[in-house]
Amino acid sequence: MIKRKDGSTSQRGLWDNIRAAKGSGKKPTKEMLKQEKKIKAKTMKNGGSTPAWQRSEGKNKEGGLNAKGRASYNAANPGKPGLKAPQPEGGPRKKSFCARMSGMKKKLTSAKTANDPNSRINKSLRKWKC
Image (tube, rainbow, N blue to C red; front, side, top):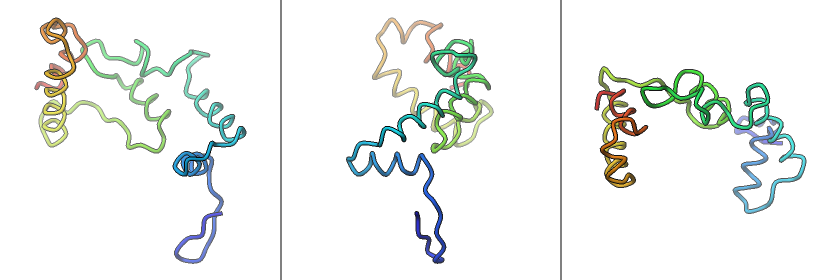
């Protein structure tokens, strides 16, 4: 049970229990892990072994994720803020993305990948018009 500031109480959900157990260094119970597996299994499509955002059907050919990929990622990660579509027209998200990805391209790619126009990092930079 969770006690709120206003004096009311509510039961903790599965994800609250798992996060609390992992954060305290304790192992989650077997039942928690079983429920977590069931929830993750719901995100799989037609018995696939991985969510759509990790397979080619969730990826955009021009770089990044397509709408299906973003939706499957958001379903698989309920506690995180959702992914949004690219913002090629401009704005704060574009500026931040371009700065972050340019740094990744310099630091984390080989010369071959950095110069390859078909690499996923170059495709995503083109998609965002960086």
